[in-house]
Length: 387
Image 1 (cartoon, rainbow, N blue to C red):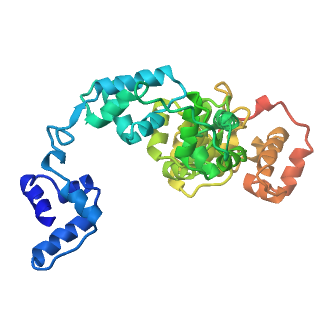
Image 2: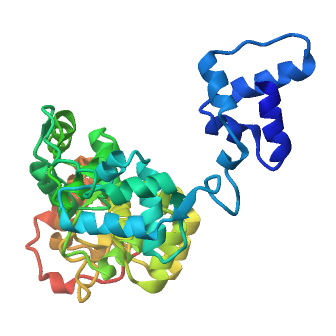
Image 3: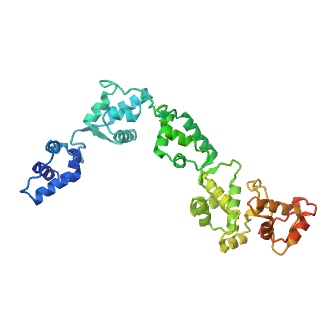
């Protein structure tokens, strides 16, 4: 038996031993061990099972793969068989490629790759026996019946609707991200959505459906979609974070993106859903706290970029809005009751106490009390210089 295998190797020195093992359906390690023992101990007979020996002895050189002839010279042009497959898929919407591959005793990946090559106009050859089995489908061989839904599956319609609803509500909510958040296999969810779009009501596993439907909120980096957010507002947010002392790498790290994508946005002023979600995420995490970079603050001051406190959420996305302005140290006379109330309300929303707010604003308790007891003035009189 080993002499037979060695003869095959001598006739086809270009082939690895693993190719012969695969053709005989024998583990490559088993065949290599047999050949190694035969070379090192030629006087000692190594025994193998009768089935293994029979499969190895049945191999002939024409059965082995050949670079020019394909499957041992027994391949054929795949175009007629795969054209027949395309006609079956068009005439029978309930059929899938997987069902036809099983009916023809083929691998689904082999059938899908061959269909892809033929559709692209590339030459493709497949085993002649496989081509005959494909051509027999619908003629000599009955087509697979419509697959009945398994008892452990449910209708995927509710899952599809829920996934589409999440994608409408959130930016950066891909199918893979939703699957990860729900702790289900991404390919399982993607396959169920594709099958549903094609009309194949195979259903979805009960446990997968339960996990997806239980997902009401998505974690970062997905972000609630805001239709009113503009490129102007995004640029103001990014510049405001820099003015607060945050560098672009730090902003990108807080938003699960790259500094290059933020830099590209500042140049093009055109946002993608990923960039929009990243900037909004960083704004929510960093806008209420000072950053560690004094260099970023100095650069922002030179460019007259407004800090986060200069903007309100209802005005930051308005291209015609002007910054509210913030304190200029040493010039307390610029304060008025309306501006102080606005600043106190803004800082209080982030959980700061009244003394902490006044300390951050650079005001004493007496001065704040004096301002708040003065009738408010028209907000149009506020200064517009933001530092």
